[in-house]
Length: 108
Length: 309
Ligand SMILES: Cc1cc2nc3c(=O)[nH]c(=O)nc-3n(C[C@H](O)[C@H](O)[C@H](O)COP(=O)(O)OP(=O)(O)OC[C@H]3O[C@@H](n4cnc5c(N)ncnc54)[C@H](O)[C@@H]3O)c2cc1C
Image (cartoon, rainbow over all chains, first blue to last red; front, top):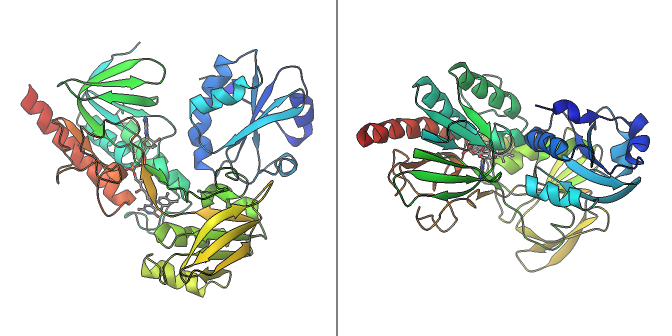
């Protein structure tokens, strides 16, 4: 599927990505986290559905400690929605598609 | 769109569903397995499984899930990702509604929807979930390097995950409502010998307190004395609730806890509907049982389908 739609971001390019004009949903994950894998297909599907309206990206918390620390992330998967560089809201855990849509719609 | 009717639909891709899928695929049955998340189910929540036979050194939950899936795929498992939102069992042909608006039907259904961690149900829990309240030690333990965390529970899962947490946290306090653990002896011995684990007995958590993250817990002892415990995180491991939202519970005569009763061959009260794994009404909820019941259910399904035709 369109897994290439969900781009990897790093501590280095994080700020520039969230401050773009397009709202942005960041999926914080790690390879050792089963539920992160569980939510993967849903996030990919949403990246397709919201293509052009919301950019959906993912950040590996093992490789990028600074950003998760800054946002006080203590559980994954955590998905944070940003608009114009500001955090709008977040959800944690392997939530369903409906809950993620509800989150995303807050930026539209 | 692909075929919407199958002889057999397997709902859920945890150990029970994947094993059922393996048996059905190998028997060349017209089957479909439906999973809403990732194949593996709850075993994705645990770091290490030490009691599944065939793996002398144990195996990670993630790897076990991948292996069962690969085994089923070798026999051409037919599977899809979808969330089933409702099931209609009043006719011989069973109907399933999916969250994308599609519907599917089958002659025979094996319910393997499993279970999910049970919340404490105390003030502060919802608000602080993901900010110090966790139900998955494997997922979240690395965020608690050199910190102090509490584990609530006294069963196998709680004690095993407490031990896992000590790889990261400085101190792990197990809070248990009784004065002894239910966990198996070998896990108990390891926990009692671990200098990083201490215990608070006969005590329940009545509130989780914190603004941006968990700061402390309000505790109530059986003798009615209250106290506070400062912690950076709390892992709630007190058993499971059934994933049964999509099931017609009255038709299936669910038990008080919402689990589905079956006979020895995993047949529910509805002809052509089996239940296997953690969703079944039973005492022992382990990977090995779930897998065994998945296999039994397919054999029961084959028998039902033979009689039907
Ligand atoms: C932290 C933890 C540690 C554990 N450690 C061990 C251990 O060491 N050894 C051991 O033997 N057991 C262990 N267990 C128990 C073991 O994981 C379970 O007994 C086993 O996973 C049950 O398998 P299952 O297939 O019945 O259900 P589950 O594993 O719960 O899988 C059910 C699947 O169904 C899917 N599903 C649910 N509803 C729907 C729907 N509407 N539509 C589509 N799909 C749906 C779910 O997404 C899930 O993937 C542990 C459990 C936990 C939580």
